[in-house]
Length: 203
Image: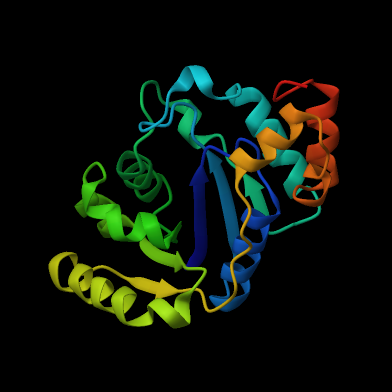
């Protein structure tokens, strides 16, 4: 059975931290592939404040070009309305029964996952791969929450034992808007060129 990890998010824009996270997961868990899945209409964000889906997907594709095991997926764009992780994973499991899916998320989201839409479906159809910048420091609380989710939902949970790159898409957008420079060190060169060519983020 193939093992594929899903990295969901707004990717507004995709940055080096996203890529490093995927590389760490791919290596540590011997994954066959990582699918980057931009959300067309994120349920918890104001869609009017988000760069167009077409631009965000194009930037993801540009960023993943050097990585043969990483793929940009428009799976969520094939549905209308809000993009809920539970719906996505349920439909992926139905369409690809030969694949074992994992969902990659940060520690903040891990602690909040029971407040997400239908968490029982998320944990039924995918394992969790959890990344935390301070894993060694937070090991006890992360482990306790993992045990809670395993007991309640029979969840499959693993942790990435690698330092996470501390970069935010919001910070990158502010750098472009201010004209100060510095964003080129935080994103792939192909993404930087795309942003400049399409005058994104208030340039």
